[in-house]
Image (cartoon, rainbow, N blue to C red; front, side):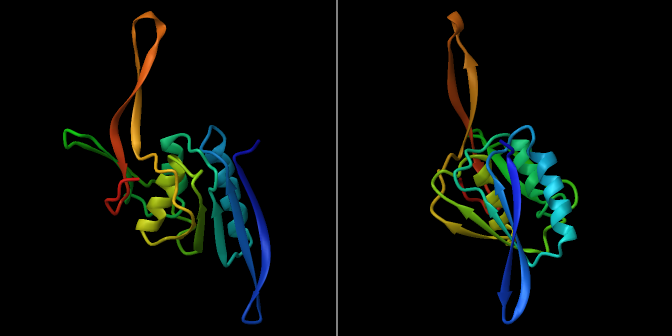
Length: 171
């Protein structure tokens, strides 16, 4: 299953025909950045009036993929998310690339199944006033976890930090 699908809806607003792009983002996986870039290239040729970004029931995926997708809206060098550790240190993840979608009105659809990288993307777009979030409270997986190998082949997952949006909110 492809992680990015795009479709279009013709709507009439105040007697004028408009095109809305609907991007369904099902996960932040290996194919996401390439497929998302293809979708953006196509969207830009259609002169859309708005974008609906659907991340409902998206369980997340790779952090770097979320940052790269967010970089299509967030200005280069601006914060997408930070990793806040209990010792007071922070790791900032900033947008890179060209924010080709920043001038297009965007709505993000979220629900309780939107987690992790979905929340990172949604939080960044909201905090930079680049999108309006609509739906339910998201999953709330605001923690950074690492797998620690134990003797005998077992392992334990340990929370090492929390994700914080550009506006300072814990996911």
